[in-house]
Image (tube, rainbow, N blue to C red):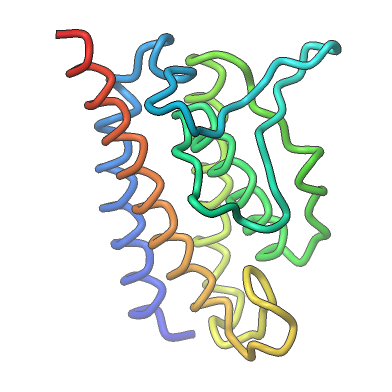
Length: 175
């Protein structure tokens, strides 16, 4: 096992998480469902009390501006799926992953997935980084666990930036 590659992936993840944590610590309950535009995606409370996201199998044009609630659900969905793939388990269907429904629950949920992912990264000592993995690509992509870990870091950075920008825009809109 080449620990230098694993250590670099872990360092990059820790840096990304620290930037995300800056925004997580500052989120207010009213931030999550604030709609920044008339054309947006959000999460909706269902009759059974669960929260489901707006979704389209083919991305619409123009792409809707998401709410923080939607982006946080999106993180929970793709990251939970990545954890399951990395552990060699079948991930749940997208529709089975629901948004927690409030600020405290959402932040706790994301931090719990972070802890799960840290376990995956630690287990890479016993897993070949060069092992093939299909997620988030198709079966024929011929990419590896190392590629997936690097993708998690990049996707988390992108989504953390989106949440941070939405949080700042909402705060500025109330001035």
